[in-house]
Image 1 (cartoon, one colour):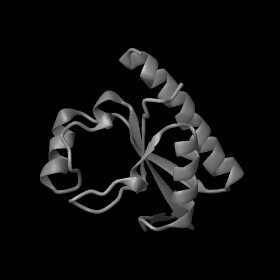
Image 2 (spheres, rainbow, N blue to C red):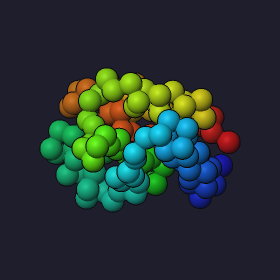
Image 3 (cartoon, rainbow, N blue to C red):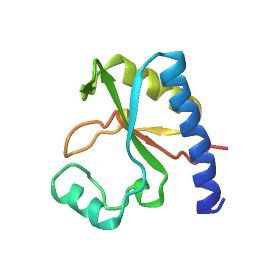
Amino acid sequence: MSINEKQFVFTKHLGSLLVYGTHVLGLTLSIRECQRFPGRQQELYDAGMSDTLKSAHLNSLAADILLFRDGIPIWDIDDLDYKKLGLYWESLHGVWGGRFIMESNGSDPTHFEWGERMR
């Protein structure tokens, strides 16, 4: 599958995730970052906010989606609503950052990434 084809499939599934989160679960969500340039990735790596210089964001195959409650961003890695979103994303064969074990800052529940089994 070409990078463009992966991006098309990823975008379709990302839309499904947003509909599920907002309409089915009734959550307030915001897309924070999808495409990332190498300089930004280097900044995050240098700041200890990423463990890699080869993020799927560099190919527009990952999105960071932030959950809000009463207008306040939720960063709790153990938040049940992130887990619900993550399980749904995994049912679409995506990779959920809530399962990551990162040296820099634990897991990354806001991260939703392309999975090789996505179609």
